[in-house]
Image: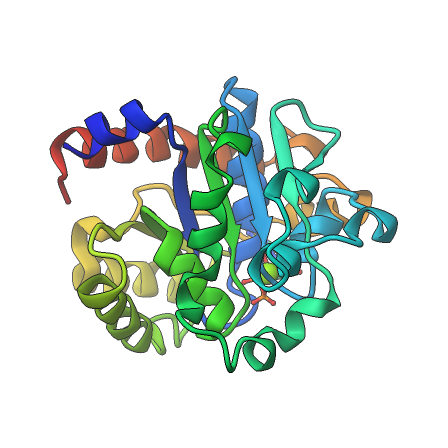
Length: 275
Ligand SMILES: Nc1ncnc2c1ncn2[C@@H]1O[C@H](COP(=O)(O)OP(=O)(O)OP(=O)(O)O)[C@@H](O)[C@H]1O
Ligand SMILES: [Mg+2]
């Protein structure tokens, strides 16, 4: 059902990459998954919703190109086409972030339906992005108004979990938020998958944590696991996603594998409404 509606409207699929825990691999996942998908010929837009602007920096978007940012679509009603920047990567575009975003919660205090600002902007500017296949939203490490706006607009959610002792800590709070948004503001919202990141296979703890996460969350967990890999952490300082900085490293290969699993899972959702 979902498929038919989407194809008629030629709307992209919106994916929110979210976890209120900091440093779990949200931005790394957005950059590498979006780039891998763009390399397959799909047109992809990243919306950087984090005032830190790590996704924008990781793609080499300089400060002069960030005068307009996702803040302006959320708060100032700017046309999306004026805010989308081309990246050096074919088929990959970005709505960058800047420091303005740090005051969004305050700036929206008196606004009606503040959780709908991003969705409203995209509905109003439909024609500016109908040729995109996927829109990835890189959320900040907080369950704030930016994250809520992202969840209201999203069709699908990816939750990166760092493979560490407290991996599941905080997840129940995120699940409650997702449930609340599904019950009220966005009934179609679905979790595409939970992604284990920074996995260290030499460490027994990683294996134990993976078992624990899989037995708790079952099919919700992506089969693909992202290893801890130094090339992935070096890549942003060269303004490149890992998958382009070193295509053959284990981290890049894992993200390419994730892209294949992404397509399979996403098809399953939109064709059967499954998982
Ligand atoms: N698989 C990995 N292997 C090694 N380093 C990684 C990996 N994934 C991410 N990192 C590094 O870990 C740090 C945190 O990753 P990232 O910025 O993607 O997390 P985040 O969840 O977006 O953080 P924040 O919550 O601050 O936005 C970064 O320095 C990044 O380069
Ligand atoms: Mg980040």
